[in-house]
Length: 215
Image 1 (tube, rainbow, N blue to C red):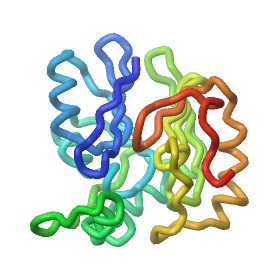
Image 2 (image 1 turned 45 degrees about the vertical axis):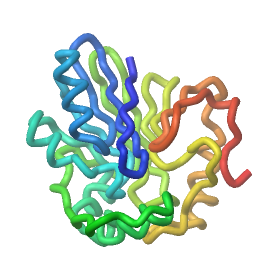
Image 3 (image 1 turned 30 degrees about the vertical axis):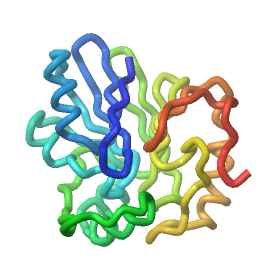
Image 4 (image 1 turned 90 degrees about the vertical axis):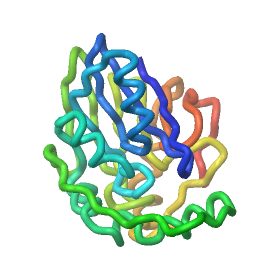
């Protein structure tokens, strides 16, 4: 079972993948809502997986780590970049929030860093969990540490790729249109129709019912 939890800030998604009472958390955008869901359902988180390093997907990573004492899995570049306010973009969070929403926040958001991941891989990684399989592939373009995570070959957690109604964003610091076009675009296009897409923002959908950005 996959449950989407959307954060108020930037509408960033966190996902809970559950098998019985065991759970895997994908991204960490809303710690309080995740804690509430876990407690209400009596879940036991076992891993946290990251799709990329940007602040709005790791806001509450340290809170969740403290609460659950579980390992975090991220590609090496993502793991490195969550440790720096400039590369996780928390130093410009208010600017990006205004750009996305048109709202000027009262006060200034705090910059923050996260500890490195406990499970670190390069470009590809696979993990067996409770009869399921997670496959990770680093796909630069949106950010150097962006990863698409496939679950059981039929569900994809795409981070800030394949968001309904939006083009792929490569203009943020560390982004690369060249990497997106030469490495990542063809991989996203090759995701089979019928695959369930769980993006970092917005609703899930079925591949083939939405077009890929930049087409």
